[in-house]
Image 1 (cartoon, protein in one colour):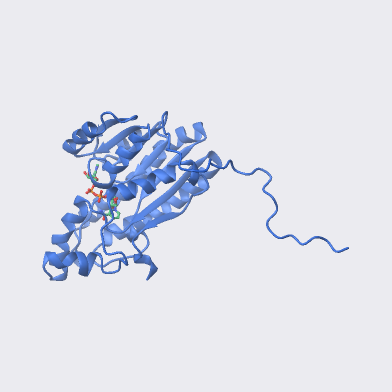
Image 2: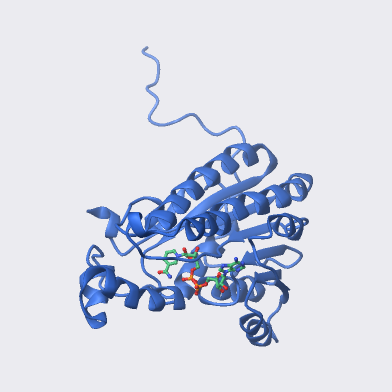
Length: 277
Ligand code: NAD
């Protein structure tokens, strides 16, 4: 008699626990999260979602007004928002602020749209500091605690510009490509300690950062501001709308939840089909 033919992979000797069917609300009570750039846009949406799931959220930003407003908005949620006024160019302070966090959302960012030959070197340096070096220092500050607990979630808010370039955005594209590499390295080093690291890569999100860009893009491309959305920003997007900050926050929460325990070192692209081209 011939040997039985295997029809699939050998059974996993230690299968991962399966989540119960149905949608179980994510419970992050007892977890401490740190979100940078939490005073507005995507960071604010992430901080509110994490607090709604029960986490204690250290909300880091240099904008005091937005932090006050966020703290007010979070009242009544199961978790709590703890505002931390901090400029991330103070790298030592950034690293210290991350100690003891279980969830780190590297989100703060800034943008300048300018041709390379006119791009101010000091702005290039600041963009790289806030969007690449600060995430490195925050990860560095958070990892010892995460390793000690055997659990951690690092979520890096990258962009389509972590995977693709656009003209006039040299610093931003360079920083986001660097963040992708940092995130993958953290995934490889963190895996034996229960720490995952991933990027979330939105297309254009309805935030102040994008609203500010419209005027800059109009000048750079020599077209009126009202044509920038369809002809420049959403030119390569199959879905012709901006994505909402709350939709990005939902992706961040997914990466913190049990359904994503095997997801690490990857980039979760929310780009309306932009990179399908
Ligand atoms: P935003 O301008 O609304 O918010 C950015 C926040 O970062 C602000 O609150 C700002 O005060 C803070 N920040 C900037 N520099 C800082 C510093 N030195 N120290 C402390 N805080 C600082 O921007 P957003 O659109 O919500 O962007 C958040 C992240 O999402 C960024 O990393 C951005 O690159 C990324 N992203 C945005 C879009 C988009 O279309 N808006 C698309 C893809 C990726």
